Length: 121
Figure 1: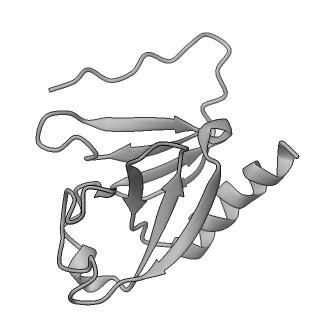
Figure 2 (figure 1 turned 90 degrees about the vertical axis):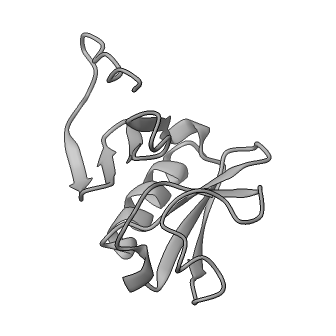
């Protein structure tokens, strides 16, 4: 299992949103269960996110996948409640693989990330 990432002195760790698998701090998005079962979390500073897109999931389009990838392009963190959810967020980090997250409150997480993307313009 991977160790927790250290908190740097002076880092802003205030939490804007948190559910079991997703956390938005003032500086970064934290995805728990991303490397499941081999690690704990992936931290993505907002300045690494190029764009965010909302995706409507269905039984054959990601809703039944609780972890991993079905197309080698999109990678979903572990979320055993994903089959009960209808919406996902896809993050473009400028790399081939795009993280897919399914926060409990999609609208709030999307708004937090979009606000941070808008600040760097």
